[in-house]
Amino acid sequence: MMNVNTKNILDKLIESNPDTTIYRKATIVDTAKSLGFAKADWAPLLETKADVRGQYDLSALILPLRDEPIKDSTTLSMQSIVNQEKNFASVDETFVPWGFFKDVTKVIKSEMFYPIYISGLSGNGKTFMVEQSCAKLNREFIRVQINPETDEDDLLGGFRLIDGETVFSKGPVLKAMENGAVLLLDEIDRATNKIMCLQGILEGKPVLVKKTGETITPQPGFNIIATANTKGKGSDDGRFTAASIIDEAFLERFTISIDQRFPAKSVETKIVMKHMAKFDAIDGDFAEKLVTWADIIRKTFDDDGVDEVVSTRRLCHITQSFAIFGDKLKAIDLCISRFDDDTKEAFLDLYTKVDSGALEDETMEDSDVG
Image (cartoon, rainbow, N blue to C red; front, side, top):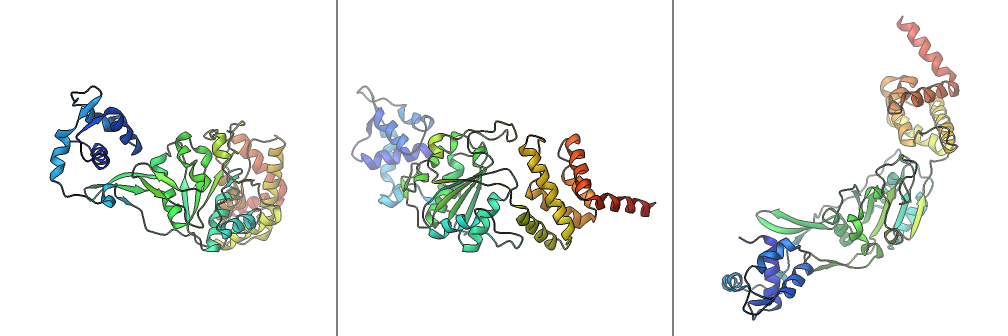
């Protein structure tokens, strides 16, 4: 029994040349390639040679199909489906607008196709900013997490067996195009050249789905925003070992690039305070001390004095830990334990200098236990 892909090639040959059962090899191969199929799919059609060299007799495969009902042009192409569920981000009360938020919101609100590449260190709110911009505007938001294995099948879609039938299931990119949604490609610098299928789509033009022959036209509002830890040139310092070098032609298709830094101290204090309110553990002095401590570490990092930074995300983790344990130093200790011992001890020691009361509080608690 021939596989589904071979049957699709055969159906296309019959549609294009209904009055014959003999085909040249080039015709068979070109037809298969136009549908996006590989050699393994068209090889079964090259097993019976005709009398003329370079031609193949497919009558044994075609004649049984003559008894099938005649299909109209709409059923000749592979059936395709798409998940109709809409995706919207929820407004997060802990979000504090800052940095490029207003600019990103203006772009999304314009409903123009305007691809944006956002780079920056991990944990500084790149993805959160885009998500909350879409939430504010009530725009459909489709997030795709990129990894080294992400390929055309993951992005554009592929064949799936549903209820005993093989159908083409459209991927998140085609869904975003049809719905006029904002497509977020998260951690795009983790990808390989397998995502080059997006190159034409990054021009905002219709795309031909080669596996079905269907043309998808982007609807108004469709846009692509990518986030990454690097600018697509790899990570020279080794901090992001999984980051790849992105093809220059691919990067060139992004209209603008944004390099996001950590927020200013005043903004970051508001962020920490909002998380404290969320976890019902408000301590304004602790919030200010945490932000000052993180700021000193980042400046030291910029001067190559340390190899690690404390991100905004990690400050929020410390806030949550403080709400659980009620101990400042323990909360910090638990949340920076992923660093090597020397770095961890140096960061803890720095915090006790920024907040001398923290060490006194810990000493008093120890004495109370005793």
